[in-house]
Length: 274
Image (cartoon, rainbow, N blue to C red):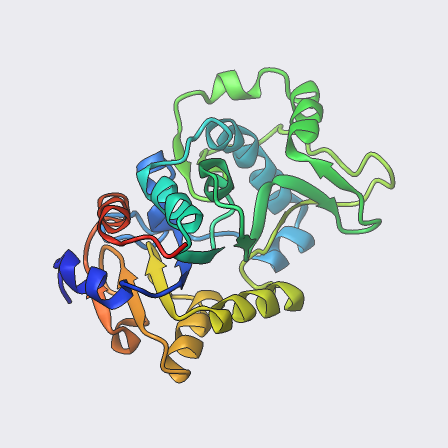
């Protein structure tokens, strides 16, 4: 493990590389991660809990109703912007992100695979109706007009969640078309990433000459599989993350460093490939 930027620059110089990002790239935008070295232990809600228990759904939507206000106000940081610049200059072939915050797109990246979906859509599990999160916010606010003011000072957790001790009395909005269960259009713990999305991500890795991991512990298989694919095919792998990752033994270069300063420095050091 190293903090030497020159090793990263030497590995990626002259190569077109795909990028896999996790929650660590968004911490500088004010969105905390799940598994960073200083992150408190969190237990995310599973898909089975969400669909099978009305109390779990009420708890989720109450927390999300508050957390979403924070999420939509976040802005892309220097790490996101550096990757967009590297794409524009012909070095980054595309970004596979495990995040749902849409900050890569906000920074200007054009080829982004949102592996786990994104936070600004909601889907009905019965009829398939898709609503914008903004539209749902209006509905939830109408049902719970004073809720956000009553819990204004809360800790924000990942995935547009907020830490709220009590959610009693919060009213959940059913599907306005069929009355079914509305769920964020994101992949929950216990769900599988859609096959076509996984295939597109593998294709991006296969079309690239190297893989850079930025801000992911690679704890879950949804991200680690792409590192294994690149390593299997003898494509160089670089990992930039605070703390250890499950892919460390597969990496050609491993930096224990923050993503924002590292990616910004990388963008300054690498020559264009256009």
